[in-house]
Length: 108
Image 1: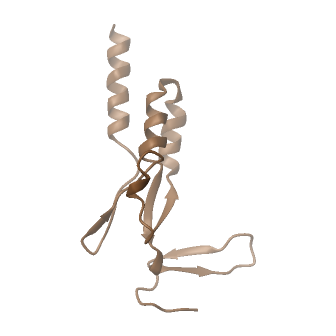
Image 2 (image 1 turned 135 degrees about the vertical axis):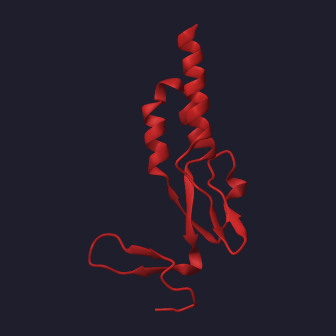
Image 3 (image 1 turned 30 degrees about the horizontal axis):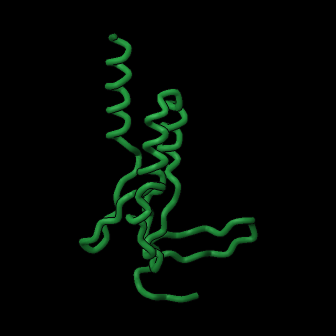
């Protein structure tokens, strides 16, 4: 019985604490989202997969509840507004995203 109580408390602690954080820009808040709540996704914001949440989900994969919660509600995290991102072409395979480098509508 003690193991079940400890497991339930651990699940509650992990599901209520996540590595994702909301992004607030000009009195508007953009929240992390998952597969179940795609309505929270905004077209004005760049989202990245949250590696911290994926690691928590992998570590707690035996509980099934924690990875399921992370995938359904908390896998993508807002990183910045799309208008503030400038892509710098490199000779490497991927370009670098610089978030918030330019606040005006500068085009290159």
